[in-house]
Image (cartoon, rainbow, N blue to C red; front, side):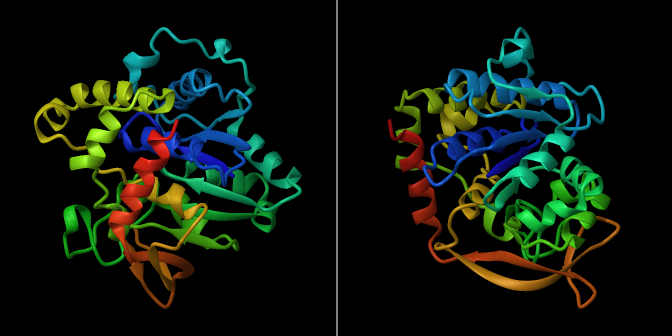
Amino acid sequence: VILDTDIGEDIDDTWALGFLLKCPEFDVKLITTATDDTMIKAKLVAKFLEIAERTDIPIGIGPSENRKKGKQYSWIKDYKLSEYSGSVHENGMKVLCSTIMESPDPITLIAIGPLGTVAGALKMNPNITENARFVGMHGSIRIGYQGASSLFPEYNVKHDTQSCREVFHAPWKKTITPLDTCGNIVLSGDNFERIMNCDNTIVKLIKENFKIWAKEESLTKLITEDKKTSILYDTVAIYLGFSEELLNIEDLKIKVTEKGITKISEKGNNIRCATSWKDVQAFKDLLVNRLVKS
């Protein structure tokens, strides 16, 4: 598996990274960064992997868009990428291509951010579709943010509509979790307590970043009063990387409009869409069980 992430803006990427590392089904070959300042994002990944003792995983830096520091910058402001004892590749698109093409087994590429790095890799070597399948957290099919019954331009699509269109158009097997299934993943009650009471390395790393992010977003009351997480959209894409058991999947033709709406259309591309849950509580329990496992 390869993870492409825009870690550092919303906190769900950090939860997703922790979940990924706690899934025995995955042999993680590479993590690439996407959007905004991809060097800062690479530092977040590197420091997380270093402390989690997973420096066997190479990091690829995607193309940067700007110098935006993001919400978790204070966690890595004194961290240098040269401190990472694993390998770091300046050209994330190139290493994404070579990792896929050189793999003896087909790769599952899980993308949990806007798709600039993935689309760039496709342009560099269109043949990557022959040895990879795409799993993404993208779009809104029938349900928008906060359970709205109208379609919404979902952030990962809207931020880079053209790249999303190119990735959806490419001839690989595509599976997505749109807001319909990932837009309601909040841990509260017993599951929240289990996370807060856990002190394994990965959960500690998630909590450190969650607290920094919450402070930056003026959302510390989530932790202190509401006792719940923010919405953990990206964790569902990680789950889809190894299982679909708890989800209902529909084969739909999806078109990406100019405004970044993913609508069902005869002119669209064939995409397998996780449009509803069979058992959302079982997923939340699975997520927490894996994270807190020592």
